[in-house]
Image (cartoon, rainbow, N blue to C red; front, side, top):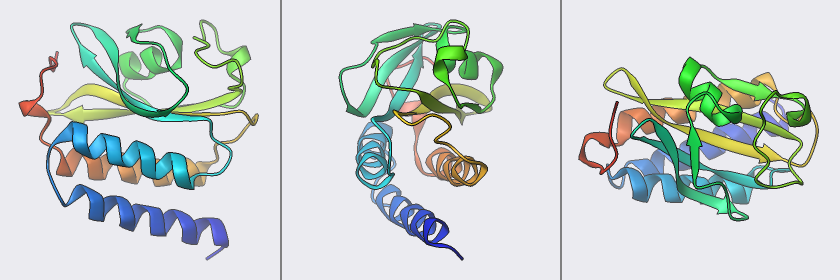
Length: 162
């Protein structure tokens, strides 16, 4: 196991430990955005957008202030949510309709989060480095999202699940 793999395995164990303390999504997403932001190298923004009335609304995050609302199908986040798939974009400047909340961002990865079989939000991570996110990062973040889905009770939140 290489150094990066060891670090990602350690982060996943830390995340699982944090998630086991409560099932409240906002508390958990706040801690996870902080954990990732503090430990993943070469990122400049990490956070969550949660679905509400057909738009993604800004949730817990670390980094510079961000876009408050993203329509489904717009930007990397809105496209990932609408298409219900992971989007890893090596160069955001080549992504049609990219929403530039931070001009320093050059690459991005977005992973849908589900509840009751529906997309209810996304995990969004930006980097100033081109081609920052690897298949190993995607596997790690997919496992993290699965852990979020298993530990958080999204039914008790104010946002709609539609």
